[in-house]
Image (cartoon, rainbow over all chains, first blue to last red; front, side):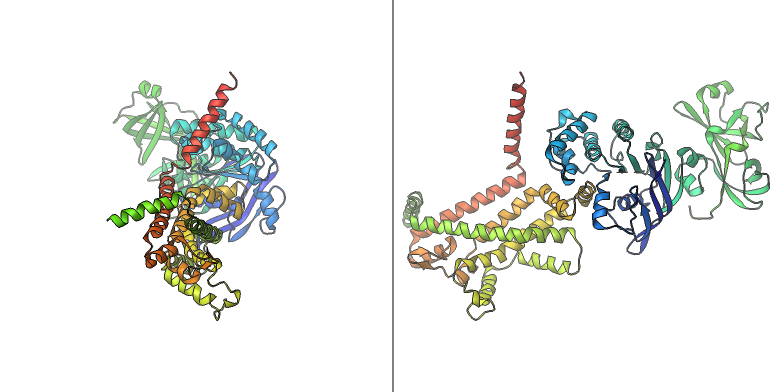
Length: 367
Length: 255
């Protein structure tokens, strides 16, 4: 568990406009870091800077071999960049055969012919591309082509693999199989990876760590469950598509337990904000429990009488929109919907545990 | 009409009997144009690539020069090369005027901007990320540029053919700096175009027609090659045939 790559105070701008600001980001050896953020949030720029393709305006990067960005000779840069490989959103194959494409990087690294042949053959086998080896790369389908770019990068046995939205231009089934290929190769070969995407659904399965980048600023870094469970601020929560995000204010706070006013309704939640401070409150819809009557709800502190406004089936789950003084969304199973006979107009009790409410400092207007 | 027909028939006979005068001029012209195109390529391809891939001070000015150079009147180029190479000119000490070297210099000046311009246009059309991808796979500045040139090889061939075609049919500059000379009865600076002009002015239509047919033949051949390249069949056709042959052999071999 040694630090593989660490970024400090990184800043980059184009024509005086700041596009990237990362105060601190660390990568542990062997982990997959997913950088998520909307288009134009500086994700690709971050990758290009790590890949030494672009020089940042300010900041320091410490690499695994001890080299530091600020004090690096051309030769060191080249040696270091040879230990990295990048995959882009478009396949970007060369007009050659599949085999020639995969061996391209090895040729650039001046690997001798015999060794090259062996490595390329092995990679073709690992990806199940042997049949296509002599095909013109321009005739491949989108998924096949992206698979070849994966092979072209991995055959170099990079220490660090950088991926810039590698699945974005593919259809859903192809995405799935390529994602499996990526995570298999990355794990098998023990590669550390940075995976950039605007669609976090893509990475939840494979990411060890999540970094959220909004408007060029790194907002939060943590385990995916942490980031989703406790977004650092409302902008992150909003980007992650969280429902049940409310504005409120802290009424009282004692020993980490606070009473929070949300649109006239009082809720108890875990919180460390001082009384009087405006906050953003996130209630995870799958943690809202609905009861047909106001009977026993265990230790849950928040019981809200609620009227069902709308019911929508989402596959195995049902999305129930409630009115309990403020609009609340709950996800319940199909079975419990039938059991409780949840229909618009019905009055139920919504139960939310204090620990299921996530309170964030309110960062004011903006997003 | 009879005259033209007779001249035509005689000209065909001249070509097929490999008339030494006509053949020497043809070979000399091809030689001059090949060398000029080669140097035009050596200068034009890197220049065009640099203009397409890098942003530097004065780039716009150079691009304008190249674009202007693509439409330079050959006579004006001839005039300038003449002014530089004439005995009292800045390069007069070379004693190149009225030698094949002078023609080559003038033709390089004409061919280079054509090659640079087409190379630049082709390289600008490549996805800039392709270069980034090549670099991220370990290529340096030069090797990633070479990769892009290779990706663009058809356009490069087209650029070279355009350069060659532009100078082989050019008469003004060749005449002015070469002088259309014979040396000891052998063509010294006489090209297909200058010779044609001379034969016409001598009233020798037969030789003029023969030279004209050869020039036309070469030009048609070049245009045909260009078309094939543009349509992408010239290089892919034989390549596909070769690949089919190889795969058939492979399939047959194990059985």
